[in-house]
Image (cartoon, rainbow, N blue to C red; front, side):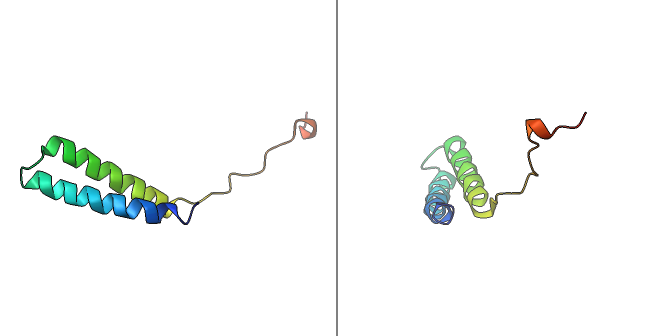
Length: 66
């Protein structure tokens, strides 16, 4: 799933870019096209660079000191 998500998000980002171009030509309102474009870019880069990061070991309740 992790490797497929950027491939799904890339065409969505490209489509949002062309939708934004239509907004720049005043065929669609820019107030609609710009948020769609930036949200698509955000999710594309998030899916591209997201890594599971080691957050440390959880302490077991029986192993607490004190």
